[in-house]
Length: 190
Image (cartoon, rainbow, N blue to C red; front, top):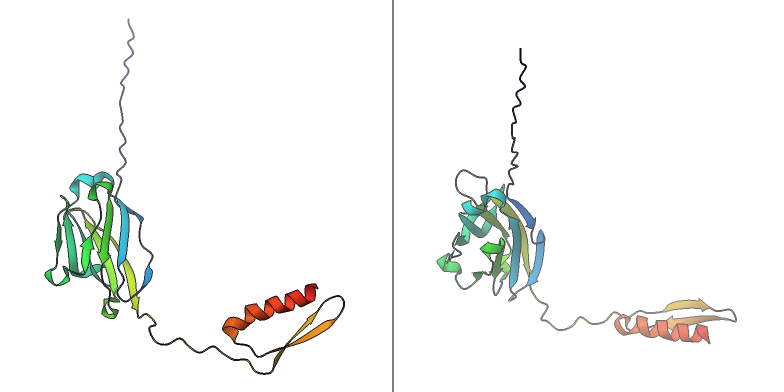
């Protein structure tokens, strides 16, 4: 009687799916002055869906999480299509091969203060990557300079090892504090 041993070798291959994710994004709140240009830069990882990239879209964001108005769309070939009314104010400066999306807004106005967002789409079967940023455009101060503040009847009392000093402070604050501090420290250190 012979006993045979049979071994079955089963190879198990474990393949973890790498889902898309944002690696880097702009700050959540950005303040810029009228007339300036702002760049929004996102770096994303497409994971296993790199070959399924459909388009990257930038536009005006609407809560809870979608684009209300598409301003510019970049297809998987890298061709950018811009909404006609925004051609002179928005641009694409990214690189899809490197998974970097950069959108720029030019010559900003106060009415450009909005929430903007990005949607990286991987076809209809996959959940897109999304992110948003709040832009605040502020006016530059172009009027005459504000007059310096004047302090009246203020005294600073200083001591060193030998004596005590009282300084009457009636100087302009913008010039005065550094000037007064230097004068006081020179006197104390003598």
